[in-house]
Image (cartoon, rainbow, N blue to C red; front, side, top):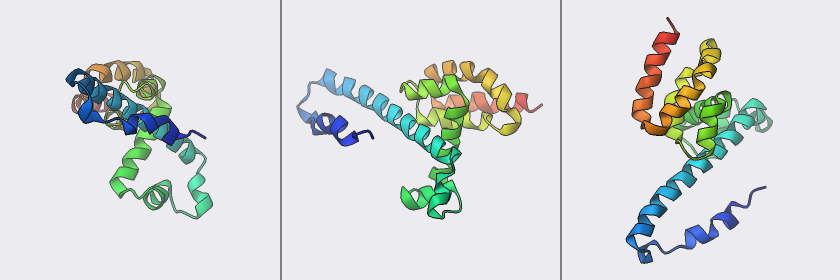
Length: 155
């Protein structure tokens, strides 16, 4: 098992107020990449948890119900997390960019509507394009691209 506390011990202990301006700015960027990469790890674990239906072992009615109870999350957050986890698993290039911390959870949430069962194969073909576009678009822009792609894919 990963010892997260040991990994983050030095980072959490840093006294940010004592750092020079350039280091604070660099720290903000690097910590955001770390958060994104950590979100990606959580999404991968969640996708596997969902795939194996491990939530059934505790008598939960669904993965959403289990997440609400065990992770103390609200319903919309659990649904989004599962959609992102499934999208990251289904789209290797996009999932890889997420794992690397190059794109965020919010990018994946914007891309997730493309990964419906009826258009999954088309989404996989578009995956490298989604991954590249997400590198230079913000999540809102990416959502617009995906909405347009979904409309065209569903025609």
